[in-house]
Length: 196
Image 1 (cartoon, rainbow, N blue to C red):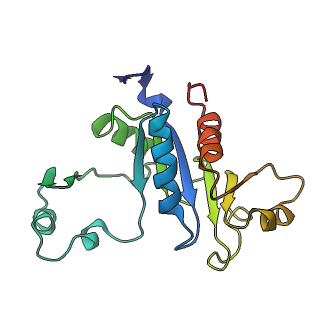
Image 2 (cartoon, rainbow, N blue to C red; image 1 turned 60 degrees about the vertical axis):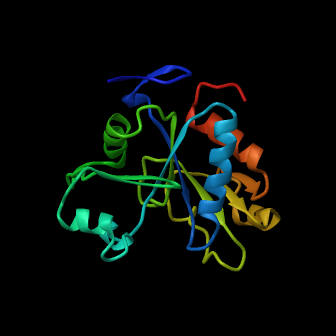
């Protein structure tokens, strides 16, 4: 399937993705929001996908309209409010679907104009490159030591990170306030065809 965006044409096979991982309250969502805004300023359309260990039905308040739609298995459905819109799809996944397969389904069905998937979570998906968000006093050890494909660490204590990384490991390190540098790294590392 060929998807045309305002900048270039791509196939769903060309979808780029990067995941921000870290312990609870390490600042992943805040960082994602800042990087996504910076990407938009550069003309790149990100689609943000947050992974949760909770069942989606648990995220709706009991007795809300969307909760009732989900209880009745009424998909797709949308809720439009004064401040935005929420769309829910029931997109069955096979146990054998890999994350790239799932992202291709999403790209084709829901987000055909996006240039990059920014994921939050999905630590165990080895195929996706990851940026670890490490926050002093909150994070419980480093994830890059046990996970594959961690390409960068963002921290509120950048200088404390360097001694933790062996010379044989190639991981970029950023301070959490270096949003432009982090964004430029995401662009380069995911292979987006844009000049920085």
